[in-house]
Image (cartoon, rainbow, N blue to C red):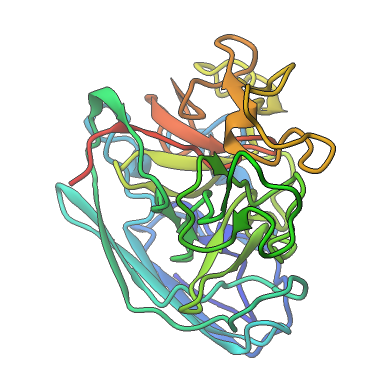
Length: 342
């Protein structure tokens, strides 16, 4: 199947059995090819392949996404996208491709977003990267979590990095957000880790909670709103973590094991602490939520575990798998991995 749209929202390419979503940007025409394995075409707005019943339009189970007990799926195995993004802060070609072998899922791309970027204040213009990333196609849970300080936890389907942390820190004696007042914005080594979203600092993030690094690499710190255009209230695959488990955004099934249960906004189990930690900079200057240490994991307080994930069924994994969620509140993008990386 070949899609021709001025700039196809990434969610049009989520699963191998369907491709559907209206054009979102009005950029110059591009071409995205998706090998669907002979499954049906889908017109813009056709959500059958990612609806809560996880069935094709004829009611039959979608065999294209059911192999190896749900751990290996053809979703994101045959995507080849290239289109010009003419939005205000991009004005560049977006390219990405996903392929699979029996054991790995491979991403190549240039990291240029495929959705509108009209806001934000970027110190460096969005720049093309040379990305090649491998993921386990049959991921396995590890004995302990992996924490990657100031490193990405995964990649979105459009080859944009999922990198929630910042390089900004503050000392115990910080007095303001201004330079020379106890906080640094790059290569910080002080104890108080600054968050990109919320709190006292502004990092120039755009409408998709993203901005650029000094090398021009565009990356998400939170909900990738541009990827969700036209996907309101749907369980939407947006990428893969480096351990190979899938990442969804905002919505999931209310019953993790029932794809026919109502779809709801997923709630993190990380909570803002009632009182600041000892030695923390003044909350009158740095309100709670400014620092990573302002949050604590409270088991059972939300829908998700300490890595912002859970085990259950999804449209692409109808037999069930561990999977992560990007949420509207901290940690936004998960801060640990449950599985093993290649």
